[in-house]
Image (cartoon, rainbow, N blue to C red; front, top):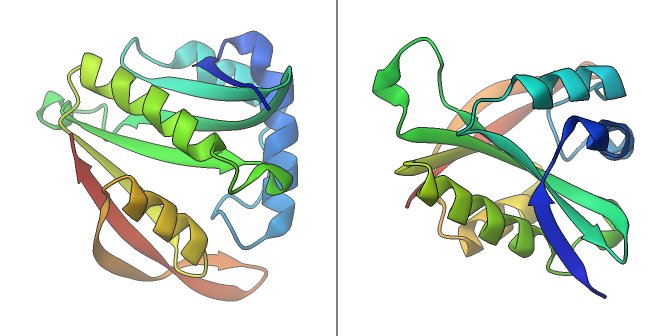
Amino acid sequence: MTVDTRRATPQDAGAISGIWAIICAERDTTAVNRPFTAQQEADYIAALSEREGVFVAEADGEMVGFQTLDLWAKYTDSFDHVGVVGTFVLPGQRRAGIGQRLAAHTLAFARAHGYEKLVIYVRARNTRAQAFYRSLGFAPKGILERQVKLDGAYDDEVFMELFL
C-alpha cells in the first residue's frame, strides 16, 4: 500500500467530513460527538493560519486519515510555541503505519514553523491512541477527570505533551 501525506485544502473537506462521520459513530475514540459538515470543515481549513494545518493521508488514492495542528491559543502570542494535535484514522486502516506517516509530516511542519511543544488530549478509554502517542515521544502529564460526557457516560482524558 502506498501512503502519501500532504496539507489539506478546502477541497478535501468532503472526504475529511466522511472520516469524521465514521470516527464519531464509534463513540469511544474521540471526544467529538458529531461530525463536522463538509462546509464546516472547508471553513475551518480556510481559516487556519500559515502555522496551522490539517494534513491528510491517502492510501492508493483514497483518504484514510488526517491529523490536525492548531495553535494552543490565539488570544496571546505567549503560547505561540505550543501546538495542539489530533489524529484521526479510519478503523480499517489503523495499525498500518498511517498515523506514523501523518505524524512525521506534522512534526516536520511544526518544527519548520517554530513550534517547540505539542500537546494532545486522549480519551482514557482509548489506550491504543495513548500507546501511539507514547511511541512518538509524548509523555502523559495528567488526567482530566470526567472531561468527556457522551450518551450520558463520562470518560477521562489523558493530557500528553511532546517537546520538539
